[in-house]
Image (cartoon, rainbow, N blue to C red; front, side, top):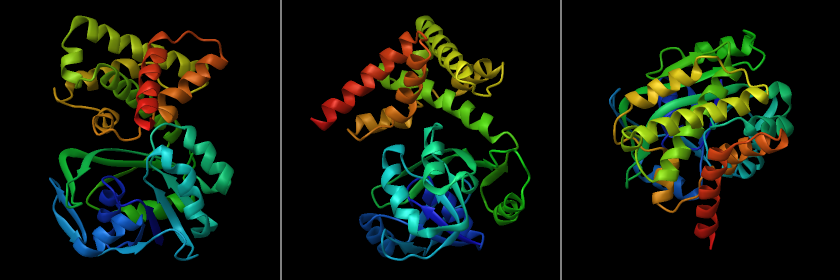
Length: 306
């Protein structure tokens, strides 16, 4: 199976590297700057699960029309429109498209571009970063990629993916409830990124205050209410589970959105908080915390562009 990993950054480089390490036929679609870096240094992963140094096959957009059997998309949501055009020559009849983006809005974009049958569901849980030399640093135990048919069927192509992922030194998990799993992560990351970015603090100091603890729970309740009204298949105990997770996280844990804001980089506010706020407004639902969070993030983006 020929795999095109779109992006060789902290997430795509890690999971693509683990597949390449396992003997899979992986090509990375990258920008010119990252290509130059990888050609000079190779793809290097410094991980608690084992260090590796690889020489990957690289492509840049427009270089070829080569079709692939599996296209894994690991980019920020604000790059998706451009990425769709970049990968269009590589998506043929029978190609499976597996997105690892946060949220759910991207699924409809990909279906519109490549058809309902091409797109399966996916998400990942991993904490990684790139150092100054482009090495992927991964120091926490969790390195999980979850995938599955949005129809919940155990199809022949999903069985092929199971065989492909078997033996890789990362956790590749087949889900028969991938839509639910994507919404659960959407709920968690929208709350976590929104509150840490709004308050410009790691999760520890926020949850350490009585008012902070109440705000976390109230925001989760507010988001879950919007999602349920929108028909999202989230479970009844998900707020309790997400609260427990946030209270067990490292004191200094920051969201990737907060770290991006500290570096004055673009953020996924429209894809995460903005998309859900749009749904709330269409259904005439009150969402005061979400509206406050999104206003903060929108002001940041305006100031950054200016």
